[in-house]
Image (cartoon, rainbow, N blue to C red; front, side, top):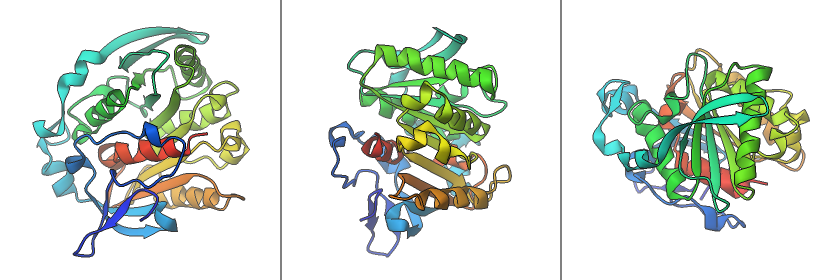
Amino acid sequence: MGVLGISLRPAGALVLAAGLFCFATAHAQSQLQPFKDDLFSSQTVLKSADNGHYLTLDYNEIRDINGRDVIVEKRVQDKYVSLKVRSQQKDVVVQTAAGVVKTYQVGKLTPQTSMIVLYLHGRGGNRHQGVNDFTFGGNFNRLKNLVVQAGGVYFSPDFSDFESKGTAELSGLIAAMRQETPRAKIFVACGSAGGVLCWQLATDATASQQIDGLALLGSLWDDKFNKSAAFKRKIPVFLSHGSRDPVFAIDSQEAFYRSLRKTKGGYPVVMHRYESGNHGTPIRMTDWRAALNWMISKAP
């Protein structure tokens, strides 16, 4: 069985089974419990390498978009979502050292909060994208439910830009959350160009000491990451990418993955390649339970 719980079906097809984790770690008690796994976690693994750290997953647009949505790319079938979590969702304004940050918050921050997940949108996006229950095949709705069900809090913020001001705002937001929840693990997921902010947070004097994992979805790489404070802490890096991504070439992301794998002493990195997937495929298809459970198990 590989690092992400791969099981072999009688027919010989490998399937990603998020519920079959075999991590023997101090974080075992924090593992996220199943939520609609039958709809989101049964992804066929075409190829597994590096002891399960690198997976090539089957993706089919007709099946995974047209067959899943009532209105293609706008509204998923009702069975993929649970709207009860909306009762814990609010649009808030947070004052940070870098200024005001508008963000959706799903769940309640308390000293006992187990984890915090931030989603940073790409160019042309906004804070609404990360809480839309019906787009991207319902995957944001599942993410919200998984996090809240685990006693965590989910944030989808706006920010001024993808440069120093935006980085400062997000670093300030993370610092404000850390004050409220000193023991929570903090994971940052970045879609597309949002990855610029992920890598900048990894070098930020404050955020680099507070974030516990990064997830890059159809995003870019940073060849200078190995010089960052976050790298020195060995925060886990989860990469999810479509093989036909026309914006960020998968060859470059794979090269980045291999460079981290070669780090002396090893580095906690996983890559999921969606065969025939496009730029937005990872946001739709990433199995959040598998991704978060792996990052929880590797968090410093």
